[in-house]
Image (cartoon, rainbow, N blue to C red; front, top):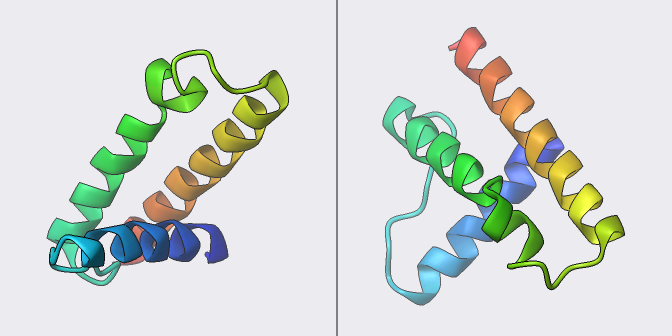
Length: 79
């Protein structure tokens, strides 16, 4: 579960810069928002930064976001 916690912490750090409410993995509504954020990050444009990233970095990001999605599903199943 470390990957999804790291993902949420990074999103919360960015949100704090703008005064947004932090996301909480224990909140079902927030988990839905997190799922949408992961889906957004997995879009080809975001995943590759419009083709600017190396294939190695794209693979690393794809693996990370995929693991985050799996961990989020597991949390949802346990809730």
